[in-house]
Length: 366
Ligand code: UD1
Image 1 (tube, rainbow, N blue to C red):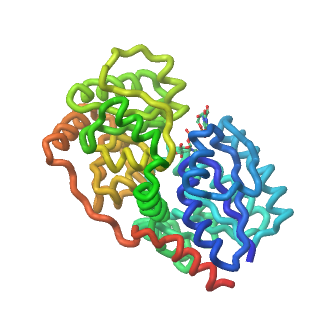
Image 2: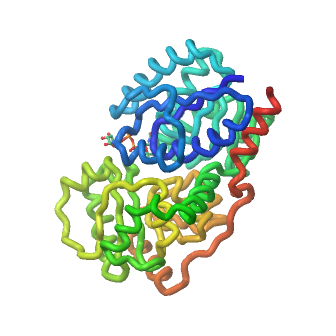
């Protein structure tokens, strides 16, 4: 059996790593295509290095563009490779444009698609990722969900439940594997340790921030308000904010007060960021993956979004939706600082063995 795994953007790489590692112990032939949606060293290369993913067989170098241009360019290149390679299955991950592009090409060329992280829904079609999720799931032949809400969403959309399997959350495989690696190889996270030193950040005594959703960062007025709220908070607890390239572009056009304890940084490697997460008091974010990682780590997470496609992080985990309500953000952070942060538990099958369960499914098909 020949399988091609397609990745392109930062949140894909930690989902590929455990599956690639597990599949390499089976007779399945696997190849990786990196579309090049993300291309900066800190958005891409460092993930391959730290997670020890072999160099992809194909790198398409697509780069940035409007969503249509980016997706269309990927489709043109992917079609050529799929027709040369004729894989039995193409595996796609998550909800980025690379996921959608690969799914569309497969569907049009009669190649079977397996979607890892299927079934998540924010029910907000203004999010580009929601469109990518809905279309990819409609086209997929095997839909592997991280949590039971995924199965329920797919059933509501009329997808045959025989194609849907709850396998658990593959991100958590990478999380547990990496924490063990860091413990044995602390040199891996030297940049994170240097940052803690540089800003004199004590464990469990600083707030870590990430923001990159268009709905938060593309509007300069809104981004300014967020920065001012974070600035105020930084007088109570230092704030560390590694800035995504999309956010950086807008941030550079703003003029706001200088807050001595609000520290902007370049994006970090995967393991460096995990280590900082594990050692932070709380996260403020609009990322999807971080809502899950904080739930697995038991760290409170305040999400600057009106909705989430990962509701289990709210019902079971440490996540809370803050929307645009900066008074609520400040109130919840005060609660956390005073020791009343949200507690949670780890959802079913977020146990570090999801990649193995996926491999078992493919082995049964051999
Ligand atoms: C993409 C995903 C999003 C994911 C995020 C994680 C889609 C629709 N969105 O959003 O789901 O959460 O990645 O990071 O696929 N840029 C660089 N260097 C890079 C990559 C991007 O400078 O390596 C800049 C470019 O100027 C680009 C902008 O960032 O225009 C946005 O990049 P893009 O890939 O379009 O979307 P993201 O916002 O990163």
